[in-house]
Amino acid sequence: MFILNTEDGDRAHASSNLKFPMINPLSPRSSGGACVRSPVISLLLIATLTTLSLLSGCASVKERGDRAFKAQEYNRALDHYEQEMEQGSRDPDLYFKAAQAAVRVGDFALAERYYSRSLRYGGGEEVKRSLAEFYIATSNYTKAVRVLQQLLETTDNPQSVFNNLGAALMYAGAPLDAESYLLVAQQMNPKDPVPYVNLGVLYDKHMNQPRLALGFYRCFLELGKQASNERKIEARKQAIEVRYGKEVPERYQVECGAPYQPPGPPSKEELRQTLRAEQNAQQEQGGQERQGAQPEQGAKQEQGAKQEQGAHKAPTALQDESAGQEGADTEPPPVIYRQVDELPEQSKAAEGADSKKPSTAKTLALAETAFSQQNHARVVQYLEDVPASALDARAMSLYGRSLAALGEHQRAQRWLAAAVEEKPNAENVEALLGVCRQLDDAAKIGELCERFEGDEELADVLEDCPKRKLLEQLKQKKQ
Image (cartoon, rainbow, N blue to C red; front, side, top):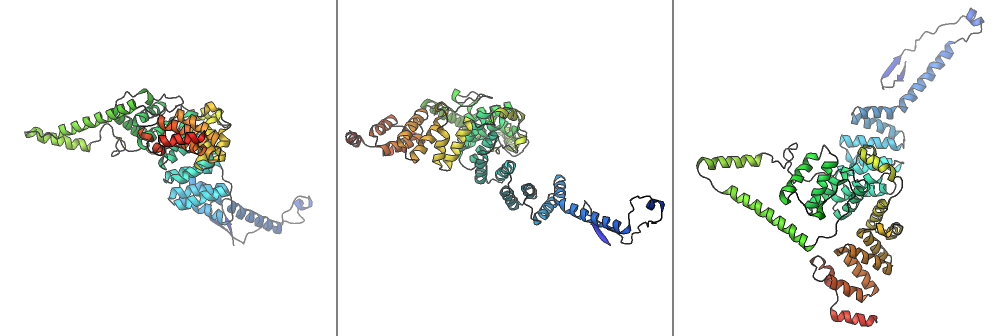
């Protein structure tokens, strides 16, 4: 008795008492020179076929795993993949598929291990994208950021990486860095709706600028609809419109389908208008609550109480009715690109021509990444080849601070001064003051201190400004 492994892994039995036809050596076929098969040759042929069948069965373990995966039998697929691993396989695709199967059975630690081995054995961009998606889905945003930063340096399709990296940074607690990457994603393809919704959530929930978020929410709903988030975004948009009105100042307007350029810091008048709008909204809300709390007599009082109780239970027009208990204030989850081939069609068409060569937007994002890693030499290397006209305040600030870190204070002063002129925030002013102190430039220090004197947002930065007498001493010493 011998055993054959079939393709499906079942065992087939064959009897050893097989009868082979005997050939008469004196028969006409024999004398005619025809090929005669003897019992010994037949036995050798069967043994060979048996060996080939066994080898074929071993080689098809991974294929059986693939078939089980397609049938959504993920535990069985994982068993097949691990059998192949036990044979010493270092196929990156094998470990990649095993990681995906482990995710689907809920073994996240095993999935992370197989992802790492797939990359170690040569897994490429698809594996990195999937690993970043896995980290975002499991709220491990810091690791997602590291993977996406590595991917950004090698990918030929950077726009989707910018979006995913911005979404990960937003939930990792770095909203300013997230803004930079999400803006690059929006500027690379202004017709793609995905960066709009992430920028809306960023400004709404993480940077306390709901009126600016309103424009991005509107563009998201106008350019393309995402089934999972559409109703929740619509509810949040309506909530902002109820609170602040549908008309927004010009600085908060967003042109759908066009590259967005962030406005400068708001003026004091705009800040007062914002504060006034919030106070009015709070007063109206308080008045409605007090009016609803007034007692009524007789049956009207009882009926009003029932109506009020029912109003609290029923979802309002600002709530996501499909979710039931999710209100308009619930933060939508980040929207990320799952894979390159799942980008919106309009995104694919727009990226086709520009993504093959590094763009200015990609170079600026690479500089941002290098700065976050404190690789100041790399920041300078990236930005010195970018035309000065293409550098915004953030890029000039990174350039200047990196030059200062490398000891090139004269060049740093020029770039930081330009950054302050365009965007005089605390970060830029503080960096410029630090460089001026390194250069012992008393005149520039005095100019900055006088220019921003009384600015509440810069009070902490200007706290170390020298007194007038000390400033005069420094000037005399300089002369």
